[in-house]
Amino acid sequence: MIQTIGARLGTAAQMVRKGARLADIGTDHAYLPIFLLQEGHIASAIAADINPLPLQKARDNIAANGAEGRVKALLSNGLEAVLPESVDDIVIAGMGGELIAKILVDCRWIKNAGYNLILQPMTRPEALRSYLFENGFELLREEAVEEAGKAYVVINSAYTGRIKPFTASDIYIGKLRAEDPASRKYLSKVYTSLLKAKKGAELTCDAETAAFYQQAILKLEALI
Ligand SMILES: C[S@@+](CC[C@H](N)C(=O)[O-])C[C@H]1O[C@@H](n2cnc3c(N)ncnc32)[C@H](O)[C@@H]1O
Image 1 (spheres, protein in one colour):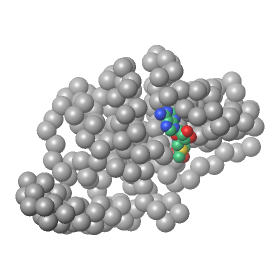
Image 2: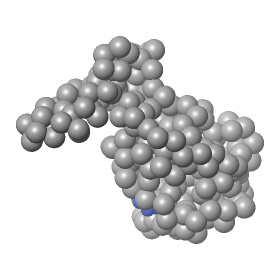
Image 3: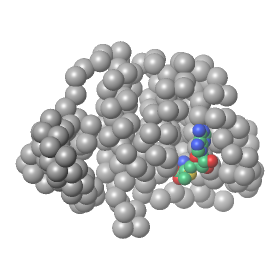
């Protein structure tokens, strides 16, 4: 059986390093690790999920694709049950930005430059980017991608240990540039929500917060 994946997971897949041992956290159906294994792109994978039902789906798909030898299903809350020396690249996709940040906060070994992180927040990417900046992670690359009429962001990051001050555009725009239709669509959405947030701050006379948003608004006006 040939495993296919959509554009959102496909963009995450492109950020996984060739020959990597992958951990897919919140794997659900295990489509991503099975796809990457069939492509010959990864050496092995851990398909982890906190919930037994999705994990059973993952097990069934792994078995249906004859991938049991190289893709292991693992019941795990975040990275808790993953052995640090058993993985190189870590995908956490299809969850909220705050939950992804929490999974990273709860992992004692993640602050290591050797791990390639591929993070796909469905909501609040700014919360995730803030966590990354405050904890010494760098944004390597970001892509916006459209699937079934919706725009998503995929973030590629790694630990450097350097903690740098960040602006509103760092956390709301990250490394995205309006160079393709998906990025323009995604950034237009960010722009609209920032205008709303700024208006809210002005209504409560919070000039500092309004000025914070304004910095990202101006950058977006130049980009879009
Ligand atoms: C919407 S699915 C995303 C599936 C796939 N990663 C994707 O992007 O299409 C989210 C999955 O994350 C799992 N999940 C939620 N919290 C988790 C946690 N703390 N650790 C591991 N898995 C978690 C859920 O059980 C669910 O299967």
